[in-house]
Every structure is written in structure tokens, then in C-alpha cells.
Image (cartoon, rainbow, N blue to C red; front, side, top):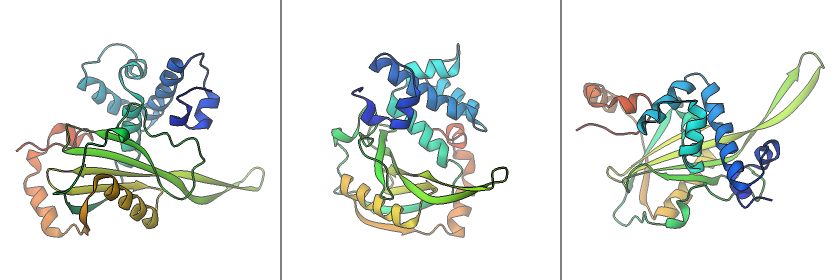
Length: 238
């Protein structure tokens, strides 16, 4: 068994062909990058990522699978999953926050795949988008059960989708963006409590986005960078 298998879903490891750990990592990255590429708008999304690093020649999946770390691939994958989902906003007090826990920042995501997923959210990946001001976290858990009726065999098939909850922490503005897919409020509250524990955040409160907030944003829309409009770094030109 590879030492990296705890960072990769067992179902993914079992379907890949590899002869060493380096090949396992590369094939895993290629699998997920190909998944992004095949989604609507995915190829353009990967091209924007490649242009950030001046990687413009050759097969986009091959190039990025060599250049990006597994945690970075997970970051782009999880972001892509929730990019079009509605967001919730929280505010918090960062005066006593701690953002230097090196153990949660690594090249492979979190070693969660030694156990099966259940309905309790697990921290999957953490990325620093810059030095310390913006941190992106992804939690996953087993989503609710769905039933599919096969019209040919007349058999009901049950399955669960993996739910994703993404958090972007803005330590410069004391704001948390929350975007989720296939999740639920109970899991969001549980994972938000974990985020608070990790970074020692205090006074977390959900903020309602009002008509005034929308008007204020629309009035300054020309200040939003191209990268933010295209779903890259959440940066604003001042």
C-alpha cells in the first residue's frame, strides 16, 4: 500500500495504474484535472490556472499534473464544485486568531481516507491563498441518500453523493465565505465550529446580505478584478 493512500479515496487508488508513489500522485492529479476539464467551462478554468504560472504549451492536464501539488488540485476541484452555489457570509473577531498551525498545511490534503466517510464533515484540504490573509478550507461528508429509477430494468437504485463545504477566511476583513453543495445546515454548523476551533476565532455570526450590501457592491463593480470574475483569486483592486 502506498504511503499516500490515506490522502486519496480508496476507490480512486483502486482504479489507477501505477508502479510507485510518484506515479500514484501524478495519476490522481490527472484524474481530477480531467474531471474539471470535462465540466462546462472547465477547460477555460484550467487555462486560467495555467496562465497564472506561465504554463501555456502542451496538454493542459499533463502540464498541471506535474506543476501542481495534490492539495492544489483538491483546492481547484472543490472550488469548481461550489463556484456557482449561493454563499453565506459570517463575520468574526480575529484579534485572538491563530493562523500558523503548520500541521494542517501540507502538499496532499488531510489524511482522512483511512476511514469511510459518514454524515459528519471531515476536513479534507486547507490552502493559503496568500501569506496569511486568505485561507481556503474544504470539508466533505456523505450527503443524503438519493433514489434513481432505472426505466429499463425497473429497479430502484440508491446512492449517496459526497457533499462539499468550502470556507474562505478573510483575516483582513474578518469575513468568512461559505459555499456548499449537497450538504445541510447541520453539517455546515458542525464544520464551522471546527473552523473556529482550528483558528481560535471568536464572535462568529451569520450576516444577512441586504439590498444595501448588493447596491454597494454593484456601485463598485468596476473595481473587481478579472481574476475574481473568472473565479480565481478573490482579490479586489483598491
